Length: 557
Image (tube, rainbow, N blue to C red; front, side, top):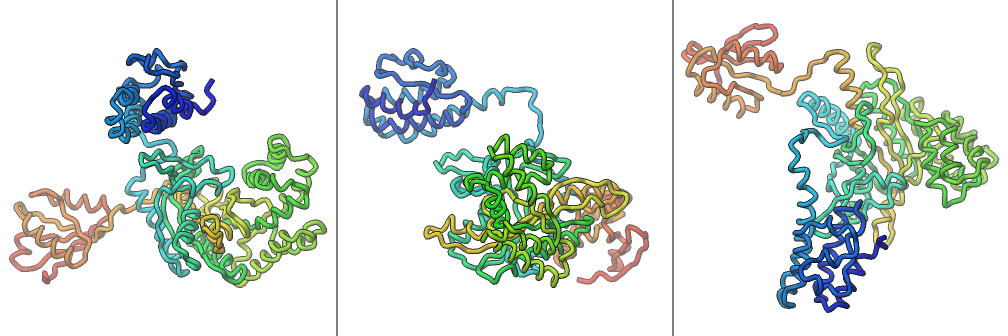
């Protein structure tokens, strides 16, 4: 069986047997690349002490049965270089890395290329959007971004992929959902999991201490997709964040106000925003007797209470995470509580929690937060929910999550369970993870789940049979005459130059009825009709597609 050190042993064997030392790293990296492409096949092979006796047939010298899986081209690259004179090896060694990778990749792809029954489809967890769907999503995005700008946010964009090291150890148990990329340049890369960590990296890299930003972009997560509930592996997020040192809970309250404005504006039906504080959770775990080393693991279990019963969560804590049953029961006494500001006051009087510094700080901030939310007029939309955990490791203070209640906005609609549609919280320590000196920039923000909201809007469209215009064309240039293409082109050029959105039919002699039917199908409201009579009189005829009323007017340059 392989030991996991085959590349190093192979390199040592080459040096011991008189191979050219300058080539060792090339061969070793080649083996590593091939192993990366075929992880399920295990180690490739071990070089013998003397590979000279191979006589051009490496298979006879290999001690591992997997040798036959390595393509002949890859072996030719590896051993062809070894048999060259030292000078030639030194010159060409630098090329062998990519040659081995290309040979291995070609072998991996070849069987798929030869399949005649290839099915054209999108990758699992992704989808195409039709023109009608794009229009709907653009309206959602416009409303969200408009709200962000109303609160003074500036736009920001970051790369779709980051260095793998940037994203690791930021998401707790969800780190396994990150998509890794294979890069020929030698960098280890990953597709971004969210827009928050790249923002923190941007702040640290550019020494930014204060910023209010919004960002709309795609993120990728390798989770089991549930298309009907708006869960995808590739999806769009809209983020709003406030970075900087400010007085407690004022930025946090504004984030919750923004969340309420967006969800109310989209008219999705009744919603509730759950709030909690990671410091309160940590305090609960501490007073209940959870070992500090298990805080993150138990927090991840508590985070599942919106999808699982307490009985199932308790079983996971005890059976899978090794927590004592009596400790789990103590936790259950707390995390099943939810209410308003009165519950905050009740917890401040709790004999156990009142002895924990972290919990007291969190409860004090929540009490202040509810005061600001009352001033904003949204306190009735907020619930203090001790089961809310937010599994991401970077949260340090207040956390929140918006869920739609199972009462649709219209009686005819079927309720659709899409989980949370917006979430966020405070992450005061994330920027410091990227700063060389560990300098922190306090941050708080929120993220709007566009795809889940879109699923609800799309269902509403189907229920009511709503028609969506896929273009913004205001006027269609038509003619009943033949050989009038030049006049149509001149007229539409004038309209475009005047900033009017206009179209025409790409035919020399289109039928007038065909042109009018096109306008009806596309929802174009007006038609400009030009013919011989209009041309002689220097006028145009403007026709309403819906009412069919016509009016003539002078053609002004």
